[in-house]
Image 1: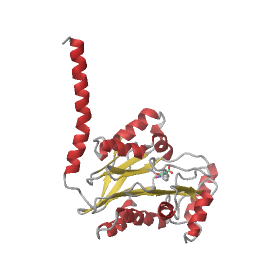
Image 2: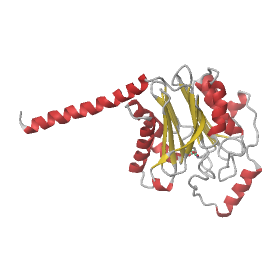
Image 3: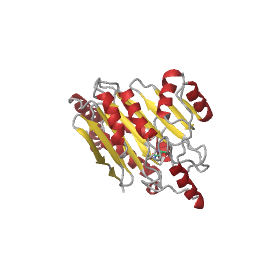
Image 4: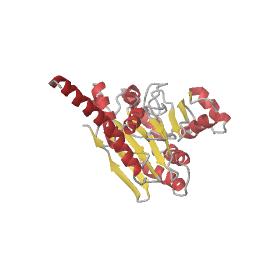
Length: 322
Ligand code: SD4
């Protein structure tokens, strides 16, 4: 065999072996006993959210119910100022909310640019379960929520209004890394039956343009679940996740053998390769695989996440690119 043919033969073989190794690694992880049930969620407010989810999971409940129960905790808490009630308004002083939910059967529901309803995650679940659609926005989503029995209320708290009036003094749209943009809750759970679900809910970027929708309600960008493989969610500047369909990418990387942490890191690296201004923003990915392994990675230091499983509750700092 001449050396060129030999070279081709070995590179081909090497390529095949590398390709084969990734699914094998994934299979060996999946072969191990799964760490379940488990719930993980973004940021410090993920702690109380996980406790609500754990109440369901520890009783053998379904991951879908657990992630909804968890997401409702910061939605109702006025101290969490970029989720639900008490969230920062947009630049016109209106609180507009985005949320989605996804189950183990690829069902999903989503609401975006929703006003006056405290629990968008539950409206998203109703969209999933009561309509033939995936996504409702704005006034249509609001009307649907009212038809479903949700109560309209003013979500703008005096504290959030005061922050907006302060912002109006200069009215510069410059999100402050890890401060204004850090409250989306993304929550992922694996239940004792081995099924995965996820939810994501936010009031979005503080003082955004009226009508702006981020990644959080967009299936594939702010949340994705594939019950064969794993689930991923994201926080930070949503435009970057939308441009790269970040969470879908994380799940697909896990399908090809990446660990949750490696998959999150690669999704951050891809943002860095494709979007030259990425250094100005925060993006954090969080992932959970079918075996209950979890991991995370972000652009800027400062992103953390909450874990709750049989070993108890803990907070973990994510690794960062910068
Ligand atoms: C958005 N990703 O609307 C959301 C904001 C966020 O933590 O995550 N804040 O872009």
